[in-house]
Image (cartoon, rainbow over all chains, first blue to last red; front, side):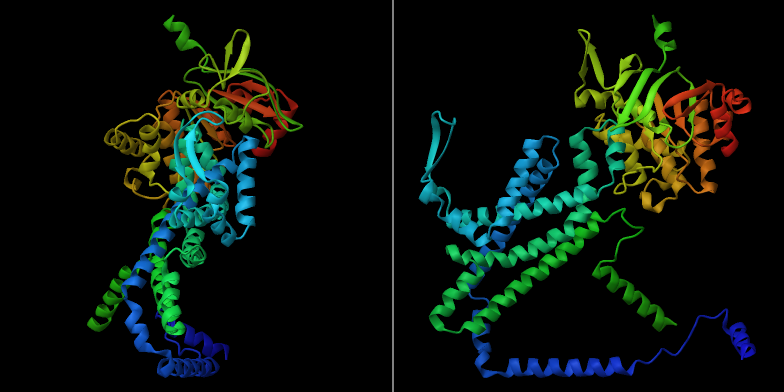
Amino acid sequence: MSQTLAQADRGSAAETLTAVPLRRPGLRVAAVVVLFLLVFLLEGWITNPRMQWGTVGEFLFSPVIMEGLRTTLLLTVLAMALGIVGGVVLAILRMSKNPILSQLSWCYIWVFRGTPLLVQLLFWYFLSAVVPTVGLGIPWGPTFVQAETNTLITQLTAAVLGLGLHEAAYMAEIVRAGITSVDDGQNEAAQALGMSRGQTLRRIVLPQALRIIIPPTGNQAISMLKTTSLVFAIAVPELLTSIQGIYSRNFQQVPLLVVACFWYLVATSVLNVGQFYLERRFGRGAGRGLPPTPLQRLRAAARNHREETAR
Amino acid sequence: MTTTTTSAPVIRAESVHKSFGRTEVLKGIDLTVSPGEVMCLVGPSGSGKSTFLRCINHLETIDRGRLYVRDELVGYEERDGKLHELSEKAVARRRQGIGMVFQRFNLFPHMTALENVTEAPVQVRREPKEKARARGVELLDRVGLADKKGSYPAQLSGGQQQRVAIARALAMEPELMLFDEPTSALDPELVGEVLEVMRALAEDGMTMVVVTHEMGFAREVGDSLVFMDDGVVVETGRPADVLGAPRHERTRAFLSKVL
């Protein structure tokens, strides 16, 4: 027995291993069953006459829905921008040596994370009820510019403020986690070179923190894209609001909700791709190499295939 | 006048005290480092040698005593008989003349070797990028790594990383270099290449303070050796004298363990 093993060993030691792969029949059966169930469900869904696929196609690119999608994307971008900038500021304040600044930041996060987003949206929307005019001037002194709150805070600005300020509270914690994840030796090395605190933060700490910050921020952006649907409560004509507007007239709820899902999926898929490339960009130097992009993977596969066939 | 400034000590410590909470880590350090001198600080871990080194460029503040670099108080200014804390800007300006090399390299991982070297000249001294790059390549060449200028720190060995760190510190043209156990995190076979670069630097006349456990380096390259234990300077002298014929029991006990 040991002799045959040793012989086999000697015979194949120099060659690459060509073993018969272990068969796993159970797994195959399970895969077939799952695939069958999936096909069954899809078939039922697609061929169901009440799904009104014609209606789905009719409204998929309708101008009202395109306009709604545009508003959804605009809201997402503006709210995330406000959230990220606000989050960075809050995180830096939170880590400040000044106790008043760090406590203020803590309070902000406490309030904006601790109350429902829907309440905050309504609050901004009805702000004019308690603060009818907004002005710029010296506190308790003269006012230079003044405007009606209702003209200043439109439905869209109320939506952006509500979504963005709420987001800032979450982003603050994400940014803080990123900054604290950077080794303190990086700070010391930068300071020993004579760099100022601001330079150290901007050039050394934040770029490294971004590697930690980007994945959860991508999550937040995708979540934000869907959360914008909440602003139907203050009648901003985004994707879901315009869909609801249509089905309240033609009562084709399910087909129109399928249209909504389709566009939300398209938009989140685009965000996924963006996140992949951002992570690649800020992953430089983190490992010994970067993961290949889909295009690079495709090229590598094509090259392999050519070599295989050439042989 | 010129003779007095050139012969004035680069570092002058007078009764430097430092505590972390209730533990006193420096209990009155007195020493001077002259221009061009290579001083090696040795001693058991926890003796305060790294802390003292970090006080020199104000990464740590001192609690009592006086610490001067080039006749200027570190981190403070004396006006009308009172100490005034220096602004962040002034501290940063004084740090530019002091290069520091860390035990764990602390290279910026998101930048290539060359970008690590040019970062401070471009950002702090506002040098034009082209000029900084040319000098950066020169410096990398000086530490034997000109061919690695496009590599990220993660792609370099420990010894190579530490040599890049030395080039990075030299890019600010310091008149004083601080080394905090520069070879302690290295695999044994990589220690030599770093010590070689440091030896060349010493031969060029750089003033250096080196916290090290490399007694061979201290003996061959050092001009003076300071043995510290428990926050005080136990013994100072020429390396050959201290290592060959230690006068204090504590020095003898330490050396018997490391030599």
